[in-house]
Length: 296
Image (spheres, one colour):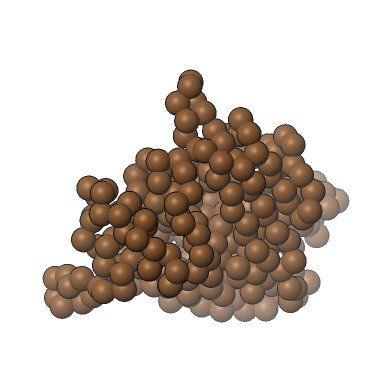
């Protein structure tokens, strides 16, 4: 990922104004069925203000389904979603930004016809007065907005060490760099809640470590819901973790509590994907890899 540089100050943009997270997301009794097949059964979790909440589980556990419920992509058959103390009855993905929620998905979802800077500017449109697309076509009333959006987007890219790609198009960039751009687009909105779906996929060990540092740094100004299958990252950055297996919640607590839960170990030892590494991360005993480096 490269060093995570601190962005230079941008007069008037104030991309990282000091604020204490106060918003809480509550998913209560969530159940989801697809064509008679139960994907989630009575699952609950709360993302507390200023905390990183991890969501883990073996393949097919229901992590992505629950994440999509939080994003408004999947409507639950039972249960409630409460945000800032108000129940969201018809949560829609298009309304997330105005609610102060930003997300990244497993696919980066960048616009190929826009530059990296312009892609990130799309995420900053909640801060625009004239609107982002008005700024793109250079309407007179939008000149000041365009400058502010560019400053915010540039600061977000700098925070991720990606400012050097601002004028490039996404299709010309390696996948890990595209992931950085997608994350910058989410961060530039300065949301109260950041939803991250497997942000470490495709990253090297060093890049994953830097991502963990970034996640811990942003939780001083927003809450984070993290879906991730890299256990070492989850255990390092999360304040609390919810564990799913076969659509049901089998554990919840701090990383130490989850690591010590026999039900969690059993669930992962029954999964045929990277069993050794997952078990090591869960128990706190890292495995050796080529070159003598350790994971976990």
